[in-house]
Length: 530
Image (cartoon, rainbow, N blue to C red):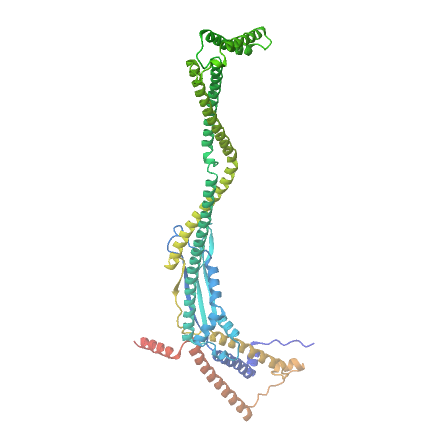
């Protein structure tokens, strides 16, 4: 079995010499292709603005802002507004962007291309959260970039986008503050109307139930107690007056209204005494008691005697002339008048007492209804006070936003005119082309070498034929070989010239402008000469 022949460095060098044409042509072809790609790709310029998110100048403990959204959320909201179809279409028409796409792409595709060319990138940093005291990531700034083919237009578009972001943030914050103020102002007016309605209800309720309110319950109780005491006093007076009336009436019954003789007078006095005695006896004994029966008999006899002493024909037509009778009659009339007055007073006091009892009885229900109105008023007043406080804070916060003293976007690095293209990276493309060219050249040379069945060298011949090599005859260089060598030299010189030209062009576009390089070189030579 044939043993594989190992290649020595000399063999590798020989293979490289034999296949240098294939390697060189392939490597140069790939390199020139990559150089062509690097040169033909259009230069894309990028202009970037850096916007800082500054906190409000006045401490939040003194003035609370009405804009409560986080900076990241607000940035994304603004970005959605700016990246809207209408806004971007206005910018495209203003600067005549993507003119090469007109007629080839739809308007939506052109707007979408501008969205892709616009980049918003937040800048975060580690900060200490005031509420938790722990480190957290917060957005402190963001960059806004736009890329295009014309540097001046790229700068102008980036400036317009930056201005739109700054203006939109100010407009949104001011509008939010104004909306909060207007909302709170409307709520204050509504709650004030509710409070006025509750006050009107309470006034009407008080007017209707003025004597049954909880505030006058103690007064009603005191007045009722006083009425009951007066009622007891007048009742006692009425009882006394009625007793006096009975006594006067009894005495008056025993008197004649006219002047009598002595016997008649004595008889009438005796009759009066007997009647009084009978009354006293009835209070102690029954009607069948002997003393009661005896007294009745005496009264009957005395009445008959008095009747016999003064007949009807003896009465004068004038009024009573008996002084005792007249005096008792006057006292009786006065007593009856007082009784009527006391009775009317008692009736009035009883009616007043019933009224106050009705008021006191109805007070718990009235207190419940009145308490509900009072609670509603207290709650509404507390709500109004809270809304007034919030309204004042919102008004201060609105002034804060109008004067731009709150959190704001500050442009710290405006868009600049790009001097170097953002992409493509021509140097990277060329380096990749060099690597790919070398790899392709080595691969093609190896493929041609391993697919060539020619035997080269005495050792390879001995290995292939298993016969010893007696002598080696060197190859004669004929006219064809010389022409081939001249051709190879011409190709190598042309390749070197092309590589030099390509390197110069690459240096001009990817590294430094040749005019700038020549000026710097002259300055360096002048310094070396001195």
